[in-house]
Image 1: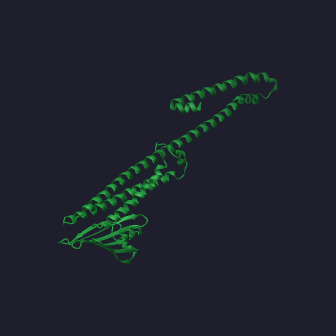
Image 2: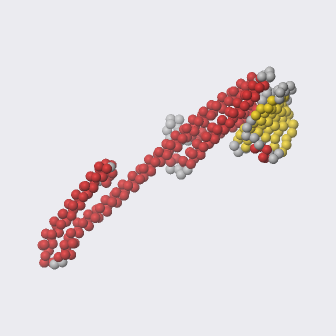
Image 3: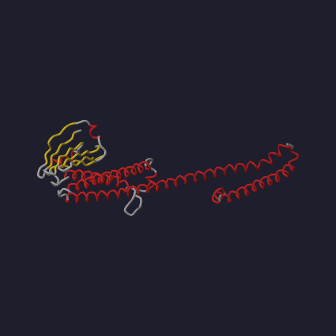
Length: 314
């Protein structure tokens, strides 16, 4: 990791030196501050951005000399793209011009990040609001809920990150006010910072909206999954009821032949075959009537407690 020392005046920008230092130096600060001497001949400040999550914080130290109207910058973990723009002089020669360049690059990266993750929400909706692809394809996916929760977490991180960027822009605005108090023109800087801050605030509002939409999709998918599970449970219950009916049919057939078998085993005399029929037929009818009465009573109780269940059971 290296830091740059830059001297920026009214008409020039020069990279004075490049040093290699320990990586731990990039983690010394998590805040920002301004230091002014008694006569305000110079204005010093320190702050940091998270330009990209995988690159770590971009620390910036600056010292503005009021007399010479020049600024010296010390940049830690400066991305290559920003280095190229700095060396090419791709900015206006105004106070805090480098700071505005850094803020712009950080804001543009966040906008790209928002657009990239917005596509994940767009995959769940068409412009008409219909699901595309069909919702069942998402629900049947094993990791659909996991992806949605990860997306919701990402929106929260972007929202907080945009809040950090807004704090840095407010810091630059307050610093420019100190320069204005000693007669240094910072109107163009203030206008541009205000513009960037307004766009950042707009992005934050959209991120809030995207986060809420993601939560609505999570709740919707969760309810659909619950409905599908309920249908599966109902189907299993109906199949179980059919199995119970089959068992009841078997039991009925068993009861149909049970009285005859009982009487035959008791008599065991071929000469009393007439007596067998006289006893068996009434006994069988009596058993079936008792069973049917018991079944009607049971179904009646089921209808009173749960009409739908009683209908399914019938």
